[in-house]
Length: 115
Image 1 (cartoon, rainbow, N blue to C red):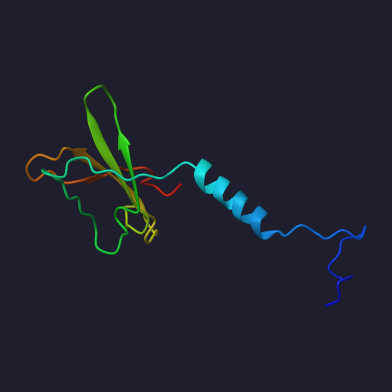
Image 2: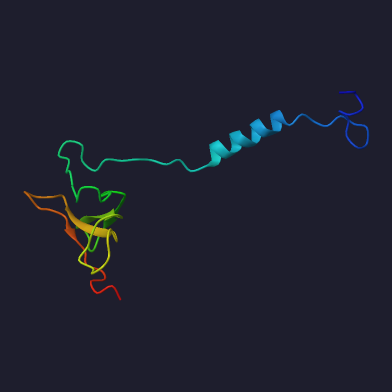
């Protein structure tokens, strides 16, 4: 490539883009919110389970209906429900937290008539 081809439209050399790209990437990394994970109780943990193959746990969220009470809502996008003629329509489960004894998650009924 000739020296003339590397010059800008006015005959000036174009600034190298590598330092500008690195600086921009550094700003994005430093100013982006960090994602964090957490455990509720690592000593007395609770394990919830759902139907096999339902992708139980695909989505998890807390439900806090009142002060000092909480439960966990768990999504299972491929779970079967009681809806007629619907296969793997997905379900949401209500799981009490902390679980006491052999308390199981229960499916929340949404649309039982498929209408």
